[in-house]
Image 1: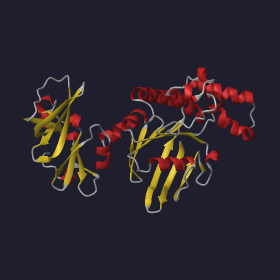
Image 2: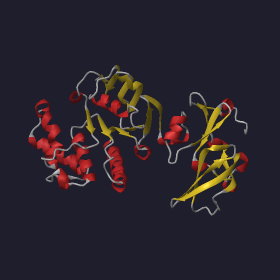
Image 3: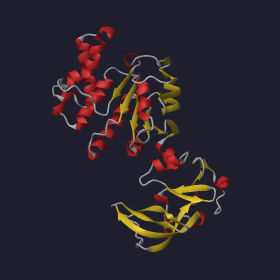
Image 4: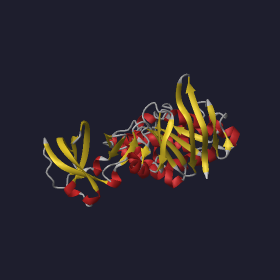
Amino acid sequence: MSVVQISGLKKYFDAVHAVDGVDLSIQQGEFLVILGPSGCGKTTLMRMIAGLEKPTAGSIHIDGADVTELPPRKRGVSMVFQSYALYPHMNVYNNIAFPLKAQRREKKFDKATMRSKVENIARLLEIDELLDRRPRQLSGGQRQRVAIARAMVTQPAVLLLDEPLSNLDAKLRANARDELKDFQRSSNITAVFVTHDQIEAMGLGDRIVVMEKGKIQQIGTPQRIYDDPANEFVATFLGSPSMNILRAKGHRFGFRPEHFLPKTLQDNPENSVSFHYFVKRVEYLGSDRLVYGYVGGHENELTLAKVPSNIRVSLDIDSEYEFAVHYDDIKYFDEASGERVEAQVAGAAWR
């Protein structure tokens, strides 16, 4: 069942088309990640779902009701901001209880019910021992959980998260990502998460929406988007390092650095394309070696290979080797539009 249905949504700021005709269906209990570079329209899209921006055109339905013109408080959504926006003069209990206090007249519940709701959500997020502390006495991860608890205490239909992990250090960020995913699964809340970080997107999302220039480029599971990109933008935006793109007559083709290996390491070399590869530099990154070089005939295009460090193969700089890629790992793109095409359409000569 769709909790959120977005149809033909647009948001224009004069000549800037921040969101330009988005159609999107978000399912019950789904963790949907909206991913894209800065300025692609992802935050504007979330703000329109929340009711903080008024669409230029299109509609938004939540739980079957048209909320396009409704104010935020009547939409049944809650939002966690990048800065957390906790009230510094209030303790954790009052920060979490604040939206309930705003609802008391409308919902008609007493203080005991409010306390029970706050304590239950605090227990779920393992911050029940922090209720008497002020925000300045909390770590970054604890503040994040308080912000999520405040958003969740009203039992919203949809939880909106606008880059809530970006203020955390790398180690804490990984832990917070795991905690957030576990919480979302256990509560079965529908969550929409905005980020420009592909690691967050791949690690958290049940599905990923990739945006660029106000438009959706592709929607799919993390594996589908990574392995089967719809166009050259998606292929090069996801992946660290990103997909190698080389030019041929009338088309472009690409392959992931981890699929580009010395031919002696290919398990099925007869179903592979071979390339002469001139190595210019090798970086040792612990579990992998990142190799920089050039493919014969494409000397103006830097090509990367990612070779596991536990594979004992010599890769000396300023030396040429025979590398190969399986046919199935090569993707083809139209030269003009950048959209994916099949090998037959691209006229790949090697198959």
